[in-house]
Amino acid sequence: MLARSWPWREVWAEPRGVLRRVRGLPLLAAATVAVVAGGLSGVVDFASETWPVFGGEPPRLGERAPLVWPPLLWLWAALQGALWGFMTAFGLGWLLLRFGRPLGGGGTYAAVVHALAWPLLAGFQARLLLFAVGFVGGALFGDAFPGAVSGVLVLLSWGLWLWLAFVNVAMLSEAHGYRARQALLTFVLAFALLGLLAAALSGVLYAALG
Image (tube, rainbow, N blue to C red):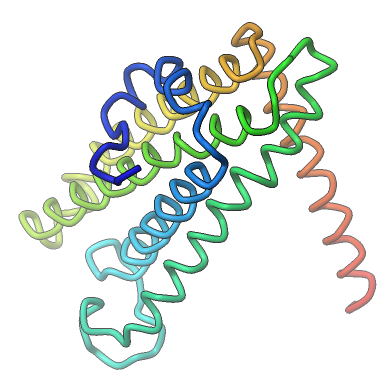
């Protein structure tokens, strides 16, 4: 399945329809989408965090612009993003499968993985759009960037991430075959567990190192 045939636009407008189209594909397709979209998102995040127009600081590599930084930094950002995308689809997918079953979900692991992998395309597009708006705004307004464009960026980012959350909930709802509110509750329970595990791990590390 070539990248140009991926549902770049449809994933925003018809998330349920997209899942119905792709859920029969092998898990390799979901893995490919998750790794590619995650890797691209990692590169955009790296650029957003370090590009001077966003107030970022290059990682002690002199005064060179980000585009000429050593390729290994860009590769590392892409690898981190790819790993994050893969773990989102396959790791979080396992949790959402387990938490969805008691709530009436009847989806398979493959369907849930697809439901998490394909929205990563929308996540990459959202990041790229926000970076483009910020970069163009900074180039046009210079020092006035924080006051002139930050409000637009905040509103745009809130709108994009809220819609992306809707896309994820709609796809999980379709994968499990239950209502959107049940899908939302599944996400809440899974993230609550991850938060508790992270807090417990932090406490253990703090006690061990402190």
